[in-house]
Length: 197
Ligand SMILES: [Zn+2]
Image (cartoon, rainbow, N blue to C red; front, side):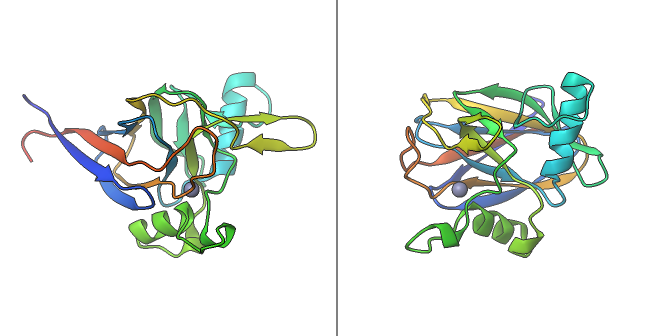
C-alpha cells in the first residue's frame, strides 16, 4: 500500500484536532449511526461560505444553509480551504449553526465550541465558523428551524479534502436531546499522507 490511513476515535462529548497536508482527506464516520458533531478550522468563515456557495449554485447573492459534495469551505478572504468530497447520511452539513456551547446545557457540560476551540488551542471567541453534520432543518421567511429528526445508519459519513495545509478539529457533540441522536463515538480517518514521510 502506498498510502497509510490514520484513524482516531472521538468519544462522545470530546473533540480532536488533526493536521492535514494539502491533498489529504479526512472522513468522519458514525460507526453505529448514533450521532453527529461539528467540524471547523481556524479562520473558517461560515458567512462567506454561505454566500460563495449561493453564488455558485444560483448565480445570485443568495445564501445556502448547507454544504454539499463538490462545495468548498472558505476562509475570511474567500479562499477555499477544504472541499467536501462526500456526504452519505440523512440530514445535511449545516453551515448556519455556531455549534453548541456550555451555556446551553443546564449541567454546563462543554459544548462543541468549547471542545473545538480547546482542541485547536484558540480562544472560544476566536471560532469563526462551524459545520454541524447530520443535522436536519427547515426554513421559512421567519426562522431557520434546525435540529429536527434525523435517521442515521451505521457507517454514515462525510469527507473533506484539504486544499492547503490546514489544522482541523472534529467534535462528537455532547447533545443527547436531538431526535434520532444518542450518545456515541465518531471516527476520523485521515488518508492520502505521502508514503515517503
Ligand atoms: Zn454540539
